[in-house]
Length: 363
Length: 197
Image (cartoon, rainbow over all chains, first blue to last red):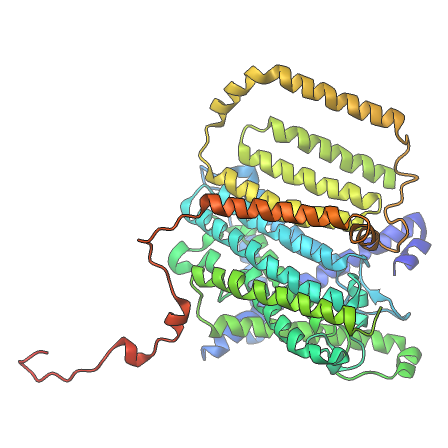
């Protein structure tokens, strides 16, 4: 893709990238609107409620009604708040959540080894990791700037939680990077070509490693729940203890931005899991090489479909977890992160690097 | 394009670095520092060292600066009081400033005048990460491992300094908690009316 962009020259190249960014943003915003509704619907279904069903058919327009309401409300800033930081915090959360999507490859390109992605970074995984590690600032700034007890406690909790689980997420990512030998997300997806058994969650091409990689997938899923402050790890906003955590003083558009950022991060984590463990855009059965060569566009759109399908599947899992699992206690959360996930993933890194060094097929 | 980006990012770095020491509120100082780190990562991307840039963001912005922010937010230090004391040390500050300025001038005069144009961020490899890995794990292996051991020592030291055994603290035994069954928790009695247990 990037070669093509460069071939367009000084003017049309950047314009094309801008167009891609606008398209991504639009699609993401629209999908978030419906994913939010899906989240609430799944939650309601588990509790045998109907969920939002008033606005539009089946309540499909609910998110848009909420959106309008958030926009039209007055922005209330507490008197003792640090005004600038208070307003920058939600903007930062939202911006970072969008920025991460620049490196996500969503479908195979028409030439082999390429993909549909805004920026095909060589350090794509690290970029996503860096951006998600910045996400904590939105929360900690918002909590501090509110100048109030509950938001501050929520922010501190959340910061400690996110920093803790980032460590195990980092090690899980390292196992995948070791297997592929590249940090480029497109390469990582292409390494999982050839049907459901070659996805990293199952990794039959590295046969005995399924014992390591499948637990790694589970660990990544649980850590992603903690990283995005989702139930059962939503302690930063545990309403029985902290009212709403760092969001207590927020309302109107700033709150909307926080929520948007939160959901974008959830979808991002789903996309990351899809890319790292579930084969990205590859379907559960391999398309023949000839077919791919003869019908590149069919292949691309099939890839796009599978990618979105997998993200949707993982998102429904996220929603189900929210409905089914009761909230953890804070000490249990920390114990899980530091005493169980961290040692497990560390041992996994050792095993995988041993495998790659002594048994691996690749150089 | 790249030159324009360089001047833009460099300006942000300088302004935010200046704001770190000018800001009255220490939390604002840390936030400016984070912006300075982040923009420096942008400069590294511009010279092609993308791996270093990401590491800078992950390590310094994502971890170290969070700890800074934690400490500064939690500490109840009167910074006005602290600043009054620091005025006594201005000769040192001036000395350090002069040394820094002299070094920068010397480096730009003696060193390669045009760093950006003949700089190779990944010599002898495809990517920056590979180039770093190839020298770090071969040529500088000993230094690399020594750095690791020093960090470990620092960590152990910090734990030793702060760890106190307090016998009165109640600790939780998770295995005991999860292995608890209904029969351990309560027993059913069937008292006759008027008698009690």
